[in-house]
Amino acid sequence: MTLDEIRELIKIVTETGVAELEVQRGDNRVRILRALAPKTEEMVIPAQAVLGAAAPAPTHNPAPAPARSSEPLIDPSLVVVRSPIVGTFYEASSPSASPFIRVGDTVQPGQVLCIIESMKLMNEIEAEQAGVIVCKLVTNAQPVEYGEGLFSIRPL
Image (cartoon, rainbow, N blue to C red; front, side):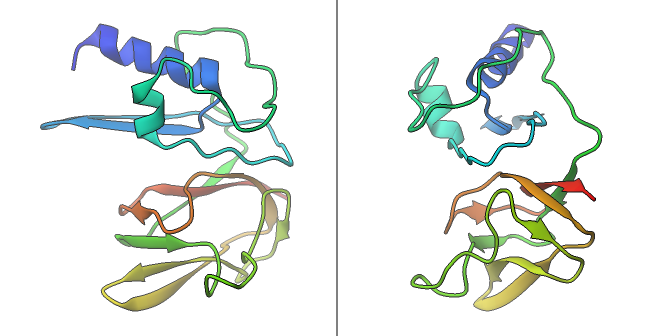
């Protein structure tokens, strides 16, 4: 992957408001993270959609895009909850149940945020600190890798 291709990916992330983008070509792998301002809306765009079009059409009215920059914006006050294991992300205990949390919810330490199924075991992922859910970084029933971002939390 060339430096120009990486710059183009950063430009796409900045222009579309995508929170996280990971691209792998053979042995080359690039991960771009961008902190988002607190919103009550959530928008999850799979990497395939971003790579398939220069500017994918959002399904709702997103916040205005920030000023263009060669580097993604980073909000150091946000805490990213990362997957401790490889598995499948589930936002609820069953397909008919309500999600454990939604963007904008306040969470407390020990509160269940999601479930990651790994090797037919359901692992509850809990909040490690109190805060407000700012962004959901994965979609329901999506495979996740070890260390992949699941949620962004603004600590209280």
